Length: 578
Image: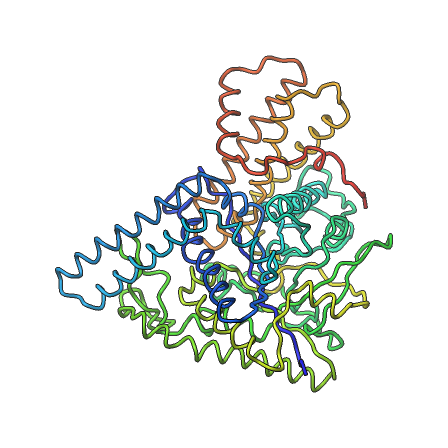
């Protein structure tokens, strides 16, 4: 008898970096994630299938990431990157041979092998990463869900038109890349806001009167999306433990400022993360949207760099790198070890730790689901959502862990792997509940994405949202003005707004991970938006647009080429107003 169902959910996302720098911030991010996470993930899934396991993994691939992986400039960049990494490892090997460092030499040779195999894999699949994910879904081994188009932070964007565009672009992009309709969505930062009279947290103008906003759930159900994932504290109350706080010292300090005003909601013991629920914040009787809830107990075992499996001293340290080349040759050693005290990494010793960690995790999953079955009399679900890049990139051995866990569950006679869409069909929830606004950040608060360090970003975004909607309404209301140039300018304006709206910029500013890059990127998109908007105003008024302005527009169009099928009308009016 099946006593419970388990769903591993990975969220794959990177901001748009093509033509926006290379190293230390830029396309190297995308290449690192492809080499260390996306391609190895494809490999372990196919290995599991060959071994007779049906992995049933759910993965979210953000539309902006889809666009980058499908872009020919990425493919060329990635091949160059891999060859550089191979040469760097060869150079390291020569030096370690000269200095008689056998363990470091073995590591360098392992890096050579790793990147050569990655290059061969990439070429063998025709350099089409997305198609390989699509094949796995078409063959029933994988479920792909979507995400907000550029990972905009839904609760803080000031216009329902912006949320409409983020959602509609996500659905349209998914259809183009995967040949079907998406069933579910990973809301950026798992951030949700119900319908209510909303006041912008950063002043838009002198009049700060609240105005009615649609609930995020309404936009999802209107666009055919059946489910999304939330943090456990949004469902049940109680203390929230953020997924990022253990990884960034800057977030711990930032949380200290907000913790004093944070009071956890009283726990609601009549709800459980083992069940799917329906939510609706609309009074008009729209179809509710289903929610699945992150399991809090197993989450920390993987998310925490200090207390979780990735903090094991034998695993590869993420932060200490050898230059030139950037290869990593040292182990975690201990959670508190300074970079100078890291010991040399041993690949074999690290891999020997995987069975214990993976078996412990799979055993924990089985224990939780078995206990729930005993208490409730029916099979529940345990949903384990993580950023995909945690596996392989941040935690190098993480994909070996993932494979072992999936295989352990496959072989378990009482626990089954499941897709979230399968689980929704199995449970057929009929209980409609309400949940509060929040994210999966510490305290379920917005403080990571809105604080004194990044508040200025929202002023720019709100200004541009208003202008985009104004010009889109003009386009919709004046069909006689339509021509190819105006259409192209408005679509590029929409791209710049959506790129500016990515939640990555506020996150990187708050964590100090790449603060200067994030500030520069948002500012560049803002300035380009303003210049293109001024050109559109000139065209509408019949004024001459200068040659230099056309050159700027052409450069922006060549640089930010994503979402060729974006629609101006999404920004003109909300399809179903609140």
